[in-house]
Amino acid sequence: MTSPAQKNESSATRIPERCEISEKDRWDLTCLYPDDAAWEDAFSDLRRRYPEIGKFRGKLGASPSALLEVLEFEKSLDQPLERLGTYASLRVSENAADPAFLEREARLENCRSKIIEACSFIEPELQAVPDADFARFLSAPELSAWRVSLKKRRRFKPHTLDEGGERLLAMGAQAMDGHGETFSQLTNVDLKFGFVTEGDGRQSELTQGSFSSFLLKPDRDLRRRAFHQFYAEFSDHKFTIASTLSNSVRADVFQARARHYPSSLACALFRHDIPERVYTNLVSTVRANLTPLYRYYELRRCALGIDKIHHYDTYVPLAKKVATHLSFDEATDRVLAAVAPLGDEYVRELAAGLRGRWCDRYESKGKRSGAFSSGCYGSPPYILMNYKADVFSDMFTLAHEAGHSMHTWYAQREQTFQDYYYPIFLAEVASTFNEELLTHYLLEQTNDPAVRAYLISRQLDDLRGTVYRQTMFAEFEKIIHERQEDGDALTLDIFTGIYRELLRVYFGPRFELDAELDLECLRIPHFYSAFYVYQYATGMSAAVALSRQTLESGDPSRYLGFLKLGGSLPPLEALAAAGVDMTSPAPVENALELFARRVDELAVLLGMDPAAL
Image 1 (cartoon, rainbow, N blue to C red):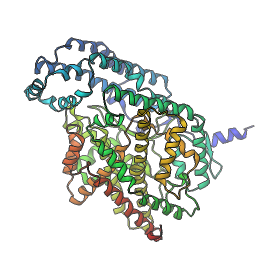
Image 2 (cartoon, rainbow, N blue to C red):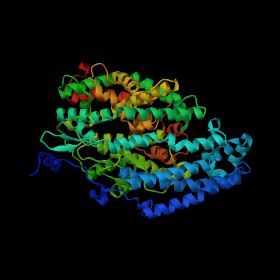
Image 3 (cartoon, rainbow, N blue to C red):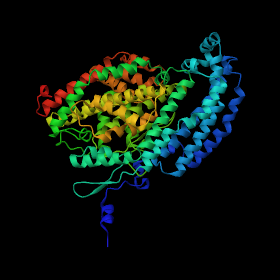
Image 4 (spheres, rainbow, N blue to C red):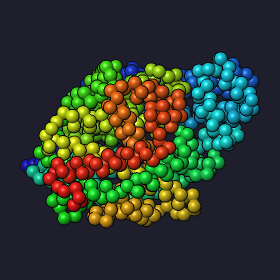
């Protein structure tokens, strides 16, 4: 006789195993290596060759040709190391519970640490070259292909230690960077969120990936139960995760102090040549423009017909009549139509990738949650998705990651290995630019007030999540790092107390804050890459400006020129060349003005008086 538990299990919506996902819906990593054995051969070759770097010790400053020789040999290590790392990382992303994948990645990380240690003499020797000689080297014809890279490296002269110091930091890098891996294993593999019973009695598994689907459900009680059940699991592990985050912050502060930066924020921003005023301008500008956000939450409360608005009410679509079930192929078609203003080449190459096997499309057991774009020089710019047909925002996620991938595609084609890699500050422009084009395209396709209300609501959610929300995260990161730098303790209560105050500021006086929401600060993976998230907000602000410029002019050349630059110019110079000044608060202000206008538009479409909000 079948037990009730067995019936529930058999009728539940189950996350499939990877082998159950069709091959055409998985990325093709054979473009990196034909098989695991080929990876092992390349790994063995790298381990055999890297000690040869020692033969260049003491010779970097001898002549331009001597410097060129060491740079080319270093590149001969870096390029295969990047490819090996891409393959290993993507395989772990397929299933973070597979011990073979984890073991491969761990071996590579050990090797990477040894290579960094073996190369630790390069930076001190390079920085020790007298200024006059270094200027002469830069003008040497044989180093012309390395001129940009060398200028970038020379910037770090004040923060480069002697050979012993660099070797010590290199030896400790793997241990210092391990907190993010611990967090990932805990939250993606070990945490079990159980099943949630839906209104029809069907049980669906609650995971990191499916949580967003539950928050989009029209059934408010289902959203509420999923929210509390999800955070109950985090609550059971809150002290462990708080300890992991605390140690990650300590590692950031140690690295900054070891390299003589005034703060961990200064350290993170210097890496990509971003002035601190860009960060502080973002926070102050957003804080000065919170009223439209409060009005948006009041609009949402009224539209949903509820007395008090909770966090689990902030994602459900407001225009309920619009169908949101889109297959991956249908979403691809719409994304391609949206980016048509960027020209035939852009569309053709992106279509080949998305309809081919750049993309790993669907959720499976153990697969990393969320989405990303990743590749290496000479490889396809792969995309990880956990696409769900009932999550309308997943089409925008696909457009977002496609923006990253095409940025990589152009940068690889136009730049050398040493100059193609662009910083995250620029990457987030390309990704959100595509989302802006998609929003514009979909709005142009309809005059239906219900559809327009749905799309404007989604754009508001995107601006809210990218500019307002990421700025709140950025402010949290800044505060907790400053606390550590001031010698204060970072405990669970400190984290949640700081976060609670930020929630009050960013959600406003009429928002009902559930106690569990304090724990949200413990589930953000980007906090393990310090001072990363602010770039989402600055990126979207720049993307709003660039997309408007491209659509109004009908000429994509300036934007495509920006993509082709890769990392060959400092980020602010690259954006300035495309027509955006990020040292000014104007781009952020313009994005928030768009948000305010959209609040009023949505209110009218939903039959409300904007003045009453």
